Image (cartoon, rainbow, N blue to C red; front, side, top):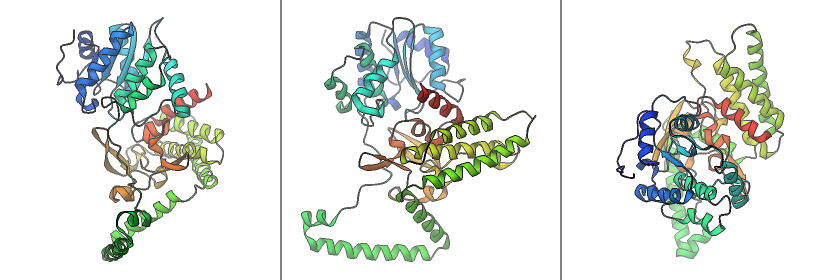
Length: 403
């Protein structure tokens, strides 16, 4: 039975959600439909009709009562107890940070065939493709399961070009590259370059005058320049490792001084996983994100050990754009898909123009991209911006790496 209207509100309980799925196994709220919710639902129904096994698609806000750590996994388990075996594709966050693909039951396709196929098709990104929406990723993975991995390159790539399944235009916080002299010459001649240059000098001097007229603005501008220098310079990985080791030693001393007292799970877990990250990393650029992650976990552990009741004892969250900036004491709204997401950030990032943001970048081929445009635990959690128990997510990731 497929009579659920497009504007049906998300069920506010697991039982209510299960009842909805018994009527229609596809529940996609408009927030997740990329502007094509009706077509997205129809596309999932078409795939399910060809599947030959039970499939449940849930893309909506989380019902009440789920735990904060891994709500999508928990919901999959709870729905399985109510609906039975099948493939469960669940997303509770339009950013894709809280999503899961789970298979329950013998004889059903394993999600491992999805990972191996995605790795074969996209290289070491494990299926990460920013041109495919969250719904598109679910549909493509379901297509892979139905074909048992024998999907053609043409069919696989079609999800990135389909109007229904592709991602909306990407928000670029770094901004476009500035036009070069050659660009101007090609479009209008050198005279236009000279005029544009003169205008630029006037505006730059005006902005400098405005900054010097306000000491607070001067300090903020100086901080932004320092962060830009940090972002553009080659990362000092050896120095970063020394910084982590120094702070981790201080946390270890505090943990040791509380011997015999009940241990704080967040402090101990964050400390342990920060130590594990240090043990498995070196001083090459491929270790950058793990070293930054170890720094964040160390500071989470230190904050968790502070006396209860103090204002500073709240959960430590690093600046989303670059955790090396320090604690995210402010928040900034950024567009993600069709939603707007508020992320923790340092004061300089909170006040900077979009074009002046200096996110932590990693090398991808010949260019550098913001870390949150890559795949992995650091991008999916925003270094703790989107989860309360980063140490658990990192622990799961380290176990997966060992396997």
